[in-house]
Image (cartoon, rainbow, N blue to C red):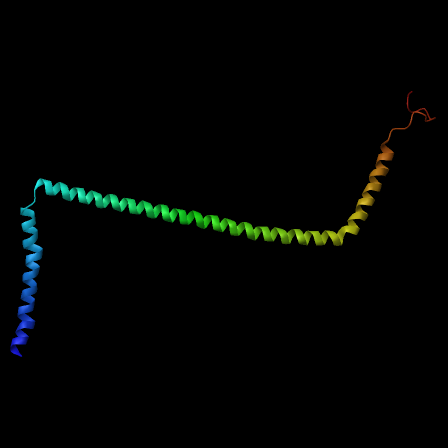
Length: 138
């Protein structure tokens, strides 16, 4: 049991610490020692390729979402047109029904107005030249 406790509390944390030291300190130091100008240029090129790829993916996503937004606007415009078309049909039907019920009174008003216009036209006509009262010079 004592041996197990020592492994659990001393040996395993020490092994973890040694592995972390090797991976996070020794390997980067060895990599930095072995860096040449050619490797620096390769790393810069890879970084630029990653940045370029990021920009291309971002632009593709912008176009994708822009097209989606445009499609959404087209669909909403079509829905609005269909709804307004139905509302216009309903309004025309209501107006037609109200005009059918008001048709007799409209005819009466039209006849009355036409009579008034005819009477006004008769009173505004100039007198005929055959009038005997002599108001119109010949």
